[in-house]
Image (cartoon, rainbow, N blue to C red; front, side):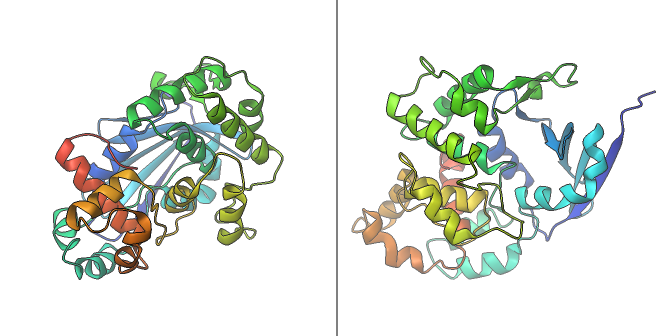
Length: 307
């Protein structure tokens, strides 16, 4: 009989909820060794206020809720963890209202009809998301995943006795990532400098990247602080705003897939400054418009392309 402490949360959402597509998104970008999508379940090892354990999330088979299971000492913080889990899985979205607004646009109407419960996938850690975004600059999703796995092996921490091999590593802390030797990791030198400069800024408290939900959370200031760092441009900032900071109107204008998707519909709109008037029509739900456009490409290609 297991003596591991466990807590179970049932967190409601407004239907419809496209669980297969959110798992496809997470699975295609899962950090090797840290998080995994297996058999309809998302899992990772987590820490909270000095306690550690495993978080497993699945969709309830009948009710409109997700089921989050916390195993280990971290289970004592179940009430506090409900909010970050809800943010990560975009449980507070009203898909009918968002879908109705976007479906007023003839470009987006068929996409909303094809995926009416599409969510904007969040992130367990804003720090991890920025690391991934920097690593992913000008490389494929698959290549970025490979490099992230190497970074975890080099600067992360192996969890002794962890029950799930696919999630048996802790992601590097900002201080550890700032200090580790990343030579030969598969990234250009300037990108390594940008990555470690960002990690150092977070470690020093200059960029409170994971302050969402706290009294000190200031989206405007966070955007400015992140954009001011060398090697971080508007795409990264908007991508992080979408996923980690839950800005429903964030728009990564320089995303190649989004630019191509718009230009394919109107060849006169090639660059972001030409596309702006068209994308402004999707306010205040541009993050969801981005997800629908990315999802269209992913559905067509059968791969995790976009985002």
